[in-house]
Image (cartoon, rainbow, N blue to C red; front, side):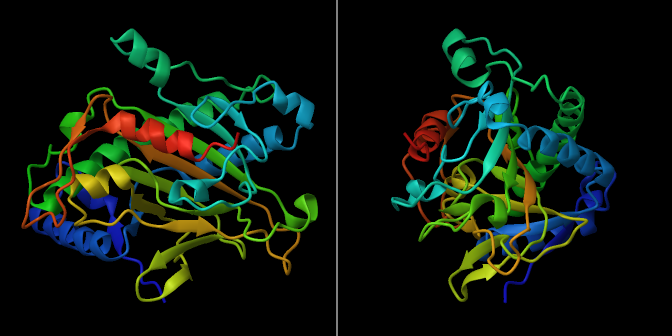
Length: 320
């Protein structure tokens, strides 16, 4: 059974006790070396904010398809990713059926000083006119996510045994992705195709992912070397944190990019629908990612441009 490490984000503030922070850093290092994910409590994000986002988003997702189609985009865009738009298993080279989900996708929108980078990574968000309350809720939530991300990245620098700003100094103008993923019920979708998941097996692409999820029979599973695929531990008060490929390569594979999937809608709970709020942390475009050398790092990757890698990965999961 997967054992989840817990970290209390309340102990990451500027006035936090040094010994307590060091203990948290040790816990985080061990968790990321073995499983690639952990549960974070004490983050201070109001549970009612997350609930209100889900209510507003569901109002959109249950609109007629023709109303949602006005916001349709491809992976990496700002708007609605409809059924059949994405297959995360493609990133592992696996030809799977499309993922059984819909997403509302938002991202960084603060202008960048390079016009080409600005056009690719900082396009304006598109907010559904049918749900006017969604925008202020998401903007408040994303402000909280940005604060938590920086606290986590500072802790990760300490856990790695380098300077606390080792990662945060690359966050002066970061990009991020934010998906509200809706997993409709089996009674709505019908029988899944063989090998079809709500989200197929994959690793995330960026630095840290901050996930607020719901428990379900067709929920999140993580992969471990010892146990294979196992249900992810769940704490309704906690965010599930996993690191992505950029962070794994940055640390020379000291830390694992957590492989995970979301199971298909279950036959024994045909009315189950779930919704996840997923914040994908990245960094400033043009960041050169260089592996931390041994003995901290285990593998020395060739240095690479963070956003060239991110674009390639986003393109890889797009269903044509």
